[in-house]
Length: 159
Ligand SMILES: Cc1cc2nc3c(=O)[nH]c(=O)nc-3n(C[C@H](O)[C@H](O)[C@H](O)COP(=O)(O)OP(=O)(O)OC[C@H]3O[C@@H](n4cnc5c(N)ncnc54)[C@H](O)[C@@H]3O)c2cc1C
Image (cartoon, rainbow, N blue to C red; front, side):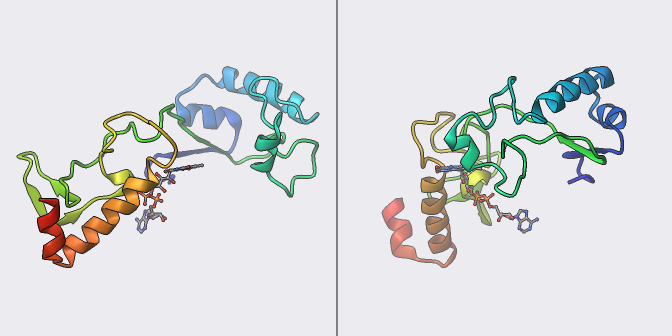
């Protein structure tokens, strides 16, 4: 993760800010505010731990008042860039009905299949309801496996 640049590391907060290309003073101030509240188990900025649902997803082994927040004090410090987005709205590999990956001429690449997050969503950038990732992931995984195994009858049905 570090090698690919996805994860940033700094032994100090200033070093982490430089690694991320962000203002070190801004990071120090943000973290000082966060830590001050976290010591009391509070998170006024985002309300983490303010609902039972939040708390259920928190760290059950955390000894503080709020399982969703704890002061961040000891380095090395790590950061990832968070990009807002909705499930199933991201681009992926273009496939046909047999889950075969298509080339730039829209021709299937023999032996290459995609399903799940690697496959461009059949929802075309919309998130109509829960399950819209796992449903197509399982369906096209199944379709791909059958096609790869040469199950001709099923192929014909899909055509
Ligand atoms: C909190 C949360 C809630 C969700 N809720 C829902 C929901 O209610 N309904 C729904 O439909 N979807 C939901 N999703 C989305 C859904 O879980 C994902 O879209 C789905 O799991 C993607 O499946 P995948 O097989 O494409 O990828 P993944 O499940 O990410 O599988 C990829 C696998 O590849 C492995 N891997 C990675 N790199 C390598 C490598 N180099 N070599 C070998 N293995 C590697 C990984 O370890 C992983 O096991 C949710 C996701 C999250 C995070």
